[in-house]
Length: 255
Image (cartoon, rainbow, N blue to C red; front, top):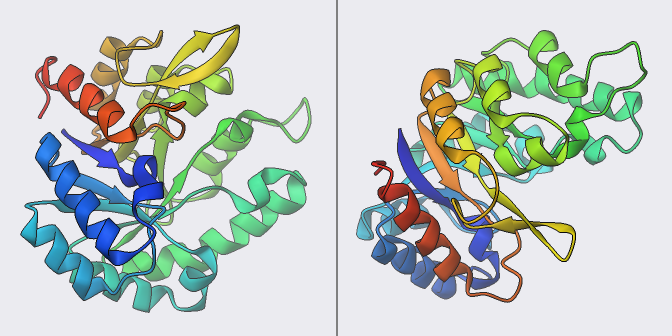
């Protein structure tokens, strides 16, 4: 397993190519060798390839514009191959499942359409969960995350499991990692603390989640890339938050 930085954490520092370039250098200077590209300005795949190489970085997975992905999934796969990335991610299920079954059906249609095309082009469609995948369409139905496991083949859909959002949905991250064994090549590591009675994101090992067990479960599940993410740093420097998480994970023997 290799640890990386989910660049959505530093999205405010990637609004143009110059800043994006500088951000990649800062991430590499922390010690990270793996990144997820998400929340960045538009870029050409050749530009990203060159920037990654210049900074000794590898892109493990992306989050992409779903409309662009749907319009030409084969081209999206070809573009990702230019910068050496196999995993192509959707940041969320359709409309955050606000409309329940109708949104889930739209998501299902999308996966059945795109997933096989990416697989045929040696790439893998990935979905990043939030807490709303732990809802049920009715009391008799399984939670949406369970249904995704059943409704889509591993070739059609992989999971970028987000530890914070599993916890926020009332789930157990270690349990779900093991349930999704073989389908969670990429994991978002995100800790949770309680500040003024409210849930708050925190650097890894600075919150309350059982990350010793989560990391064991990542290994059991066959995870390849453990991507540190902190959507909100609550006024702290996001690069500093990524650095603290990196140091805490390195101290646990990861690299």
